[in-house]
Every structure is written in C-alpha cells, then in structure tokens.
Image 1: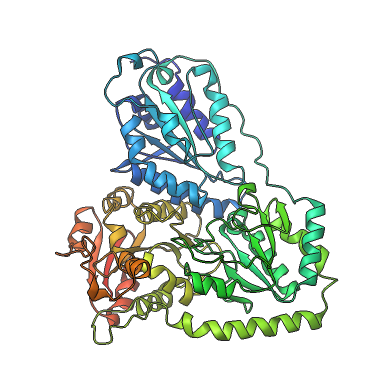
Image 2 (image 1 turned 90 degrees about the vertical axis):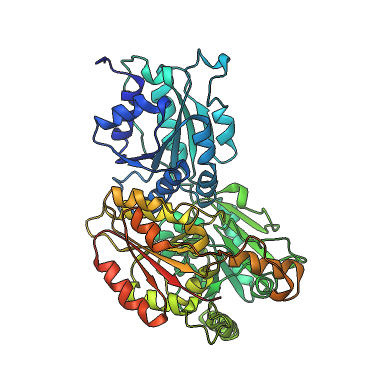
Length: 563
C-alpha cells in the first residue's frame, strides 16, 4: 500500500472542499481507489444496492438540499454519485433521465478501465461519456490527473448554474491511481440567470396591462429559483389580478395552493387543459412539461392568445407556443421586474374585475377538483385515494412529501394545501425514482437543525421497481415513512388504454397490468430492515401513520386503496 497522494485523494479532497457530505453509489473494481479514499475521509458513502437507486437517492438529496440552500448560502446543493463502469452507468440511466427532467444538480461519476488497456476491450467496457451525454448538461472523461482539478470544479459549477441539472465525469482507474501534487481549485460563486432583457420586460408589462383576463401558469423552474421567486410570483399575481395554475405535470410547489387566486394544477387532459388555458393572455413562467401525455388533437393554447414566456432555461422559452414576449433570466427577478413595471399602471377596479373572473373559474373547477381520487367503488372496504390523501394531510400536513403516486398524484395535488418547498415528485415519468428519492430527501432533512418528517408517497407499481431502496435507508439510520398507495395494478395503463382506444374496462384483457398474486410488501420491507404494516381500511390510516411518524427509523405502510 502506498502513501502517495493520488487522483482519488484529490477527488475526495475536492468534494470536501466544495461542501459535499455524502457520496451515493454502488462500488466496483474500477472505483476501488475512490472508495478507499472516501473511507479515510469525512465523507459518508451511502450504499445503494442498484446503481439506479444510488442516482435516485442522490437526486432526491440534491432537490431537497437545494431548498435548504435558498436559506443558507453555505450549503452546496449538489448530489454526488459514483457508479460502476459501463453496465453500472447503464443501470443508472433511468434515474439520470429523471434527474435531467427534474433539474437536480447532480455530479455523476463512474470508474473506467485504464486508458492504456481499453484497446483489448476488457469486460465491462463502454463509451461512458457518450452514454450519459443525452441526459446531462455536460458529459466528459478525465484522461489525465493534471486535468482533474479543473474538470471537477467545472462539473460542480455546470450542475449548479441555472438551469440546474446533472453532469457526468468518467474517472479511469489509472488516472485515479496516478500520483499528483495538484490541489482542488476553488469553486467560486454560482451566478443566477440574471434579471432579463429590459426591452422584453417592458413589452411583457404592456401586454399584462392591456390584458382582459390574464392567466399565470407557473412551472417548476419557479420553485427551483427559490422561495423568494415563489413570493415574487404571488406579488405579481396580486398586482395583476391573474388567475394562477400550475403547469401540466408540475412536480414542485410553485405557488401557494391556499392562495385565493390559485385555482389548480392543469391536468394532462386535452379538454380540461384547453378550457383552463382559454383566455386572451397567458404567462408561462418557468414551465417545461406543460403538455399532455400523448398527442393532443387540437392546440392547447389558441393561436390568437397572447403568450408571455419567461424562464432561466432559454430552450423552454417559446418552445411549444409562439412567444409574444420572451424573457430569459431568473424567474424571481423577472417577476420583480414585471411588478415594478405594472403595479402603478393597473387600477384597483381592473384588478377587482379580473378577480371576479378568477372566482367564476374557481367555482367551475371546484366540482371536478373535489372528485379527484374518489373513485367509484362505493361498496369496496378499501380506502379511496382521496380518503388516503385526506388522512395523510390531517396527520402529516407539514411533512416533506416525495411523491410517485402516479394515479394518486392528482388527488394529492387537488386536495392537500401544499406549501412551497414541501413537495417534490417524479417529473420524468419513468417509474423507480420516488422511493430512492425519498431516502435521499430524508438524508438531506436529517442535516437540518429542525428536520421535518419525510413521507414517501409511492404507488405499488413504483415501489416494486426498487424495494431494496429501503435497505439503504435502514442501513444509514434514516428517519423515513413510506406510504404505499396499493391498488395492486398499473392503473395508469388501464386509464390510458381507455383514452387511447375507447370502450369500457370489460372490453380489455389488460395483459401484464394486474399484480396477481399480490406482493407481500410488509414482509419485503421487513426483510430490508424497516418496520412495516398493512392498512386495510380507511379508519386505520390515521392512527397507523401517527405511530409511524413518531417512530425514529424507517416505516413502510402498505395502504390498500380502490380505483
């Protein structure tokens, strides 16, 4: 064993100097120098039993830690994950995709074969940077230890600079073993996206003043910009009398859902989306997934509608609808700039007239929202999804929620008054993100002086992707409560079958969609180190959840629900 200072030591020292506390991963031979160096450092290595679990944990950690960083400049809101060469990186691509869509600031690394050995095409070989590239802001490989300090610094800066997202670095074995006298480079301040083009701000302000009934559609880039951006959205909405909705497939709280001008998240339903977007002026603020799950027959926004687009991601501005005003910058700063330009130009009478229209739309939408999650199984002894969500809100109303409930998602969004920085969900749509992300979020919450309860709200189909995520939570003494919304089928696929092909449920075989026989989630969770209990009726939910939240450790509640 050598006492020489190596690339692996430099890598570890750089992470510590950048304020990293955890490295998530699944180890392999090409990563052994890094694993050994981490073991002699102050970093904690969080073991995932599958690489996609490691990526999901790091992502949930980064999303939650980003909220904390909005209130504490000393926090580095980046997740770091180390994977095992080509197959390990391939295993992690599902949740790397999810991290890209949700904008998680991740530094993803993987070991690789030594640079002078690859021509022999040894086992596990692959072109790592190319594999990761489509899901990353930047993807590269460190081919010389002398380049390691600069490339690591660049990786962190690119991941954390808005619009945030994952980056990838390959770390060959010979580079990690190479001796060096280099030191980590200082990270430096991370810039925001700026306050926007003044000319476009003026034009957008004119359009808002001239509007009849403006609609503000807030997307998740608002929440990613910080609590101040959400506050600024409220200020602008109040000054303009705008009706407010969350974008389709919103996965964070971008506007307080108990505010009088808030109406709803826009559902991924063509007719409902078109109805809610049917107005003369729409502001799309920080949106990225504002479209339906499958193709829509007609435009969601009429061609005559005036559209104002603003985002810290220039790709999203004017992407799916032509933008009459287009502003690239930090959403919070743009909101402030618009507020300064409109608040003296819109009369109280105009605001009151607009608010009357908001109230009318809310009254129209309320019956639909109140039905979310009720189902139609009146004689079924299991809880409805609405009953489950209502019970959770009563018991854990202030908890941090990580959601991958899929068909239970809109019941939660419609019925629970969620606050900013309280909720994250699987924006990418591929199953298997929510449970690992819940573990990562709980680890991040555990770093706070006054941590909140963390509840993972996970559909049964989602839970079955990576049930062994629970092992990581138990191994690392994480305080986490997981609530499984268990309807024992991929309900989303049944719903989409009917939408795509019409007819009634009895017309279809639904091959491969039902879980028969049912999986014993309780025994599965216990085998991975959790306490677990099945909840079979609505009146058992609150008491069981209260006990779980009071317990320090990992609890899994398998709650049977009907569709």
